[in-house]
Image (cartoon, rainbow, N blue to C red):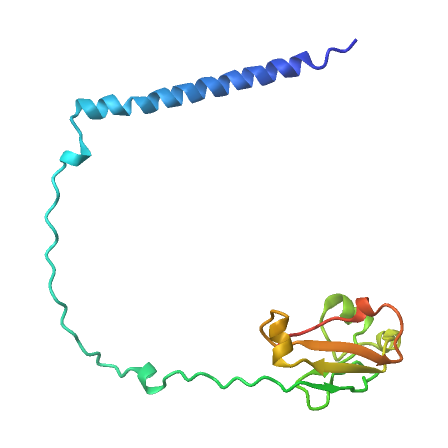
Length: 180
């Protein structure tokens, strides 16, 4: 009957002994530092404290060049959140983006090639456009600021829903391609 690898067990034991011997030697050499420091009478508390480096006030010197930042101070931009609203734009067959009413959002179809790559191209082929099935219209809703904060989010929250001509596989085609 097979005993289970006697050669391998011997190799493991030999390596373990070598590692243990090396570690013991390393620890013993580390202990030698104490007697050497005692023999040299080194005591950190008895060391002389060095004199401080002399310092003096630095005189203010004006630059010969004008300060460009003082001439153009930074101004905080005015942040405006979009008003909550809903729009239902008709999607173009070409896949070109269309503005969703007065909302600051543009939506468009994805083709088989752009759905995989996540990039929109104006040079999509006719076969790609023919394969672009999906809704004819999509409802775009911008949620109000209070709802956004209640969700624990910072930023604009959009809801997209297909409304007409919807077919299956929405999850594969529904992609957010770009955030401004």
